[in-house]
Image (cartoon, rainbow, N blue to C red; front, side, top):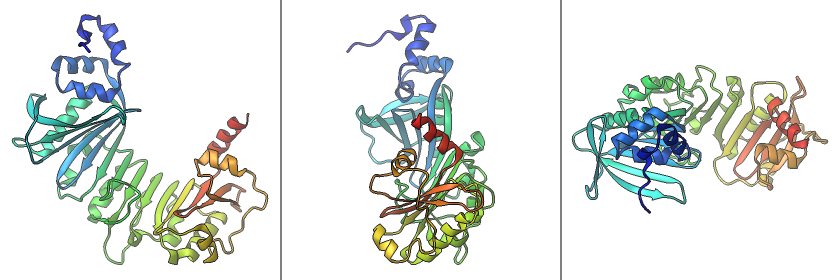
Length: 355
């Protein structure tokens, strides 16, 4: 395939062509041509999110679009073969491509560093990308509580992040190996997340984490952090936390508190069971004892599955809040126990599907 003569076309045609190309592919190309990068800066390209990743061994920045992702790791990586040179804001940075997956929509580069620190390299990459990307969301993923965490440039550039994940594992569903994090760092992160905070951290002995301000969504994955009987007192809209088989009576207590009217802002409560626990086993152990369920549900199982994205083999009950008659789906499977509230938004969504 020959090269496409983009610069032979008028600027208005160039803009239309660029807007048809995925932002991640454009971003990857911007590192090898200053002229092309300057053109992108004039056009401004829309991306879904930019995510900063902090690890004790390396830092990373990831751009995501609707279909592709571009991941750039920076650190003291071994091996210096097949390197190409990028000039980022007049600073030379060597790079090597690790993956270009057309099928999976993923581009992955590594930047082995010698003359520049990981922090400076990441900041320069960020300046380069932000010069032509319009980003909808900013996220931060922290794999280690590094001493210089509060000094990173992205806290000043983006005072608020849509999502902050503090977890030692790549997959959010893996809850082992909590990070040791200082209380000051915890408080700092909480003050900078407007939407979702995912915490798998170790706290001080015999001390549970106190939520200092309302956050729409929080994930608490370390059992030692969780005051489960009072989890609804937080007033948070979406709560996900981990439970054990020995907490069935406390789970019943939490469900009854919602039925009695506690935390009317709640939209989703998701309790992850520590091990594989079949629904029948949970019920035999006393789950849902003294929890009143509707004999005539207002919403069918098919509608509930469709609106909340459930699985066909989920066990679904319906419960009602005594204070205002608000309904919720009580959903059980082998890994989760969920309260999914039929909010006005969900009901409107269902009505539009019915019509």
